[in-house]
Length: 273
Image 1 (tube, helix red, strand yellow):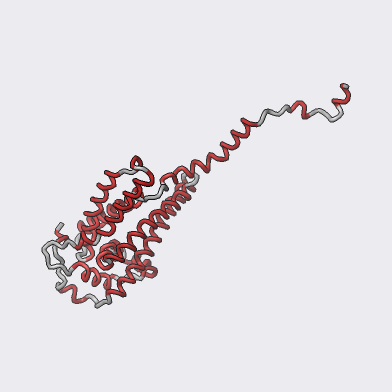
Image 2: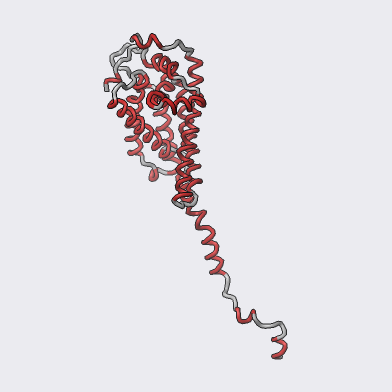
């Protein structure tokens, strides 16, 4: 992982990058981070729930996906907000790396998305150099330190979850293993913000690392959520079986009706007297 070594800000390529206002670019990247979070959650969980319910016939799948999207947005939104308050430049430079990779590999899709999130690859490159090329050490540990707020928040959510829903329902060891994996993946992923992959194999590695980091982040957001929303999966079964359960209970409590007497005329009883 040579990318963790010091990134030199004085290379010839940096002379072609535009000068930026770090405060203005911080506002722009913060806006883009929240916007892409909402877009990603809406598209991913919305399509997942729609396909599960409309195509595969899983009743209540859209309700489950809606709750999952809400949980992901709240969890990741808190991470973005806290990290931007504590380490705005490095966090935004690192977390925007997948967006930078999208612009590098899929320019047309990036141009369409840029109409919404106002992403500019040249100003972002200057911002990333400003964030990570300031260290003179042989190993640049800034690729790790920007994760401190999110790691602390993840551990705090896990502790709160153990208290609220019980330790038996918390996969503590697995969560810590995934958290360690996320720490390494995010550090390696953020190196691509200042060192663009130039070969096909490097691009494949960058895509693989980005996908794995997204999976780890989604897992942690789901399994460290402190509030007891894990029972949301039971909503679908409750909604689909409530009507049938009510019909069964009604039929069990109601005695069978004598249909033979219902055909008698009102005057038949008087004739027998």
